[in-house]
Amino acid sequence: MTKESIIKQAYEVAVERYASMGVDVKDAMDKLQKISLSMHCWQADDVSGFENQGGSLTGGIQVTGNYPGRARTIEEVRADVLKASSLIAGKHRLNLHEIYGDFQGKKVDRDEVEPAHFESWMQWAKENDMKLDFNSTSFSHPKSGDLTLANPDDDIRNFWIEHTKRCRWISEEMGKYQNDPCIMNLWIHDGSKEVPASRLKYRQILEQSLDEIFATDYKNMKDCIEAKLFGIGLESYTVGSYDFYLGYGAKKNKIVTLDTGHFHLTESIADKVSSLLLFTPEIMLHVSRPVRWDSDHVVIMSDDLMDLAREIIRCKALDRVHIGLDYFDATINRIGAYVIGCRATQKAFMQALLEPSATLQQYEAEGKYFERLALQEELKSLPWTAVWDMFCLQNDVPVGEDYIAEIEKYEAEVTSKR
Image (tube, rainbow, N blue to C red; front, top):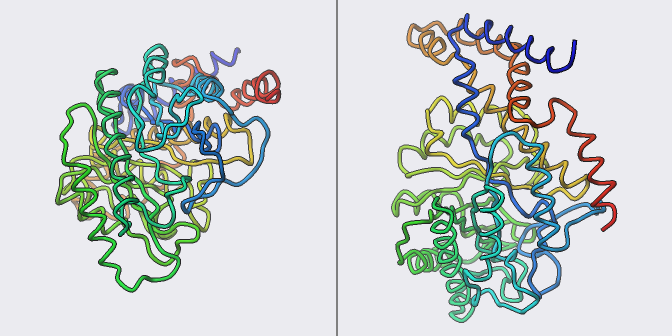
């Protein structure tokens, strides 16, 4: 038998097995097909970007590793993203930071950036059937320091307000061009190494800055606000904490971003989904994998990721939750890191979509908690992998470990020569 025939045979068995539990496999596959992950451009080049600023990465974040083959130009980033996309089933988005503008070798400060600096990105995305998302960039700049939008210095604060306003403008033009809302994420590193004399002071300033930034209404972009637990060198106090942005988002009807690496390691991000859905319009996810801190390891199919995917499906919230990836691993092949993370995320959602939720809910309603737990355990060994293999086959991407050879070939022919 050929590999393809084995996959199809195993799939037919899986369809029957799941049908016996009241699960429609085709419906689950159709729903997974519609999930577009927002791939992050910064995995390709270690968050370097294309400004003329130079200098090292600052602002409480850090990339570790020096694996050869880092993308150095816009062309190389685009080539790497397309290669990774060719190994991932479905159609996905690309998430850009402002520092990835097409500046044509000219120095453009962050309060001067315009939609024109992203026209080539919009054209490229359209040519490759991708949609774009966007981020303001507050780190790695002479005016970053420890405080940006929460800075008491009016000159510095106004510089970053102008930058963020322009990023919203760029996002609006992206959304208009692609006829699909561009999601603009706002994350700042503002904080302090020690506890400040007044926590309230800086949060009041940040609230005022956000009110000024969001004063203009747009129709083709969506605003997201992202919290963080701490940054390197800013461990004791983060102005934009989760409580701050949750309150602001609920009050001002903004999307709150949940980065899975931005919380205490024992904190359940999945548990936050149902609460946010009650009080905020939508949710943005930045899927990462923290190891003892926000170390942005490559996403794998972990229990935390599985729990998050299940919660979204159980809430029937696929139309209100946007899923992006956010990690930067420079210790391994960067294209491989993309593919592992995206496919792991899809696998988690596939298993969640194959869950016999009606049966589980019935057990719960009848107080059959043993039966509920027993079925949840048995689901772990059901033939979901056969469905996943067929999903890949139907999308004409490598099945199983076959993508490893594809990435090794690309490394030998392309990235190793950089």
